Image (tube, chains in turn brown, yellow):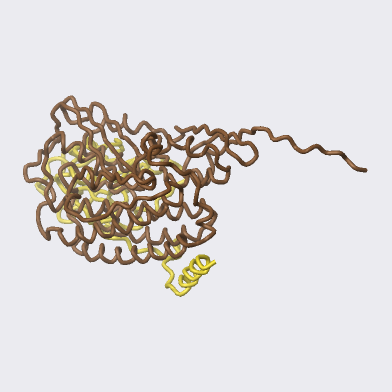
Length: 374
Length: 154
């Protein structure tokens, strides 16, 4: 018996992805409307991890808040701490000693390395490499975290920067340890380069998807590697230097096509530049000196006023907007997280792409859901 | 094709590397001297009493309010055996709330509190959340037995 079958009619189907989905890097939910394989519409849903961190930080003084800055951006903790400290220092007009500045830069750049290693690993999983790149990248990241643990005492929530400088002196063998870890990281970058960059399968999976022109990137308010991959050489470390970044020579890598592959390449090159910065910083690091200013009040009190401090975090511009009415607590604290601002471009990037590429596009943004929701 | 061979060559190279993983529950990694696990109180060997005078400095500075401190008059001061007028009577720390920020150690004027830097401070899983509230005896016991010498102090 022959059953007559019509060609199946293609209808638009809404597909729910997340919040518990391994490729959403946390708890993030997308509702995709697909026609066949093509994505017609995306509705992102955020807020599953909202803890009211900004409001909590308003109830704390300027030392207590640092622990919460860590917990907001848990892959680039030092960048978050640095932005918070810079904001308070600018308001109180504190001059940070040079040695502390250099150690801050070294640690922040090492943190950029560890964060980008994390991206390489997770991005490998998104692209279908399963655990291969993840294990290699994670091993290098662990070496970096060992240094952080020796210096600050904790593997993840360092709480090491303080308003005015650092909490305590670094270990005696700090410089040698950083040199060691730079060596292993350089090898790790070479390994990942060998593993991914020229791999035809990986390249075919990444090229020509989620492409953004420079104009689109600027119009959507992207920052960090996503913006630079679209060909805009905007880097706060170069264009609006903070701390001692104006004393180092490094390049700002930019991409040509603005697609997912370019974002990967930009991050890879950024890691090499970070190593350059750390090497220069280690050379210029004053061997001795104070790590907190001599005249530091015991209880930090800011004058009334408002300030916006921004740093170039691994994911983009991390800003802290702080309003003070005087006293030892912020009146209002707002953190501009690059993950949240970059995520707003997801819809425009994904529409018209294939469903399987939606995962890659989200992965290439390298979002931290904790810092999206705050 | 060449690229795939290159990446396979990279994974093949990794076969000849020394393993970096350790079998955790049986083998323990060495942890650095400054490691911050959870706060403990430190025992004064000389006077055979805790360093802590119960001054509430750490309690006030704690961002998550995980500490409860009760002070009392030191009976040894009346007997002339100690210089401390006041001494700790009761001390509770809720390890379930503690966020290990080290601020209590920084504000302590008597170097009486420190961060546990041994594995005993990390392996604290309990079946009941209430069991994570540590009292004075528990907080002092490790320092009393000389098991801990915190790397970071005031």
